[in-house]
Length: 166
Figure 1: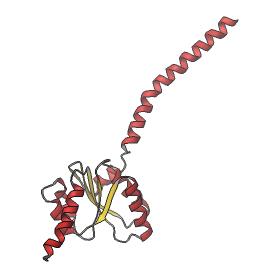
Figure 2 (figure 1 turned 135 degrees about the vertical axis):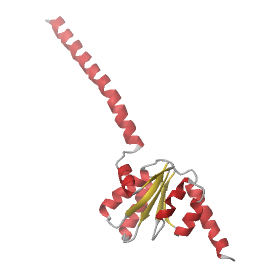
Figure 3 (figure 1 turned 90 degrees about the vertical axis):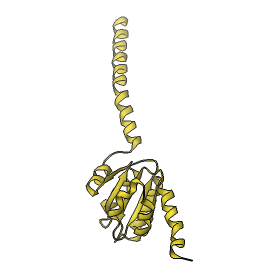
Figure 4 (figure 1 turned 60 degrees about the vertical axis):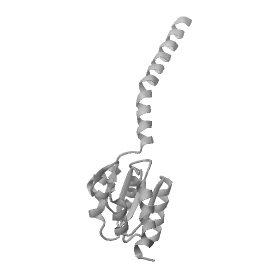
């Protein structure tokens, strides 16, 4: 069997994983301890993301003709890939949280919803709260004026009852 025939299923696997993905993040994982790597994988799994190490040449082949081909120049040295199809910033947030404790983990770059981000851009994206957090903040700010108005009306009603009794 030729080497190409052996590697084609892996290229197809990568293509299937990145197809329809909102985010693909490349990281350099050299120097991570087993404990740190386990924590990283667990965090990504809980966030609904996939994380795997592939050969750079296989990733380049899989990225051909997609938005993720923008990452080809970064595929040098050991590379791991984190993929998210749902939440665009989830893998970046998880990787950033682990990178705070594990200094060996370094961002290489990312493609988020078709746009390429370098290391600085990825770190800026890491500070964006999740969709759920943003929605809860929006609802909280919408409910606040209504709640305050209800309290004021309640106090006015209570004062009115106290004046009527006197």
